Length: 402
Image (cartoon, rainbow, N blue to C red; front, side):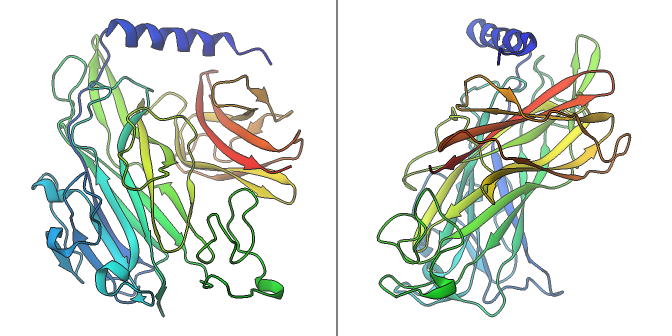
């Protein structure tokens, strides 16, 4: 399929802006995150067994379990304040009773987030250009828990936001937004145990790694868990003056990309293989890089929570959820064999908005049954507003075996 002219024009325009460094670039400082209560809440400080909150180690460190580098550690929701010191990074939340070789805090399971200290590449982010927000890890240890952690919200704040003209935006230079991390904690099976009958396969796999336990791959130490990410309703934006015209902006979430080695730093430039679901192997620190983008709030009036692709009955199910659709007419879906390759429109009929003209959102699904062969498939979502304006989201990808 031939690329649309406006896509080619947009790519050429953004390349020109990046080369010559001309205007319309924003400045941002530190990105920090604090974990909220573990849910579902029972009215106290969380519902999970033996839950704890911690601050530290310092930003950039990979000694996640070292209590000598932990600034605060409590069963109350106590974490470092935004911008306090180096320990405002790697705020953690953990739970469970360790059953492996590690004990105490280091043997618990949970989440951690290390926000970027100064967005250095690009040092002045452009609209709709991906930027690194931070590093997220799932500390996946064998535990017992009568009450499991189902989801936790991460409250993120970006400081020292400046408009392209160098002035502070309205109402201030601080932008706050939230993400929800959901955890499906599967039953663990030790290596070498014979999983029979209904337990012969793990629920989450990568490629052909399906056996429980397998000799290698993501299920080598027992069935892997899954972490899903979704945006919370938009609560904070900032406004800049663009040649006399006020423009409202937000930070949108593109998704995660996995790190093969948790000790590595996240690359400032993503590959574009974003996902909103992460498969997390047992007895490991599984880390992922979180990328976002500065984008205008208005445009098609769509605030997208997430988009994902999953294998369902020999087809790929593309799912997406919106938080609001102010003037959105509907959607189109596109598929490609690479993140930078050609896109083929999937839906023959236009996918209409379920909540047209409303400030509320909706959930959508589409089954792609016309799969050619195994390999990587990439999917994009296009929203179209009432005046014909469009916006492209994605890609998200999925790997299929032959």
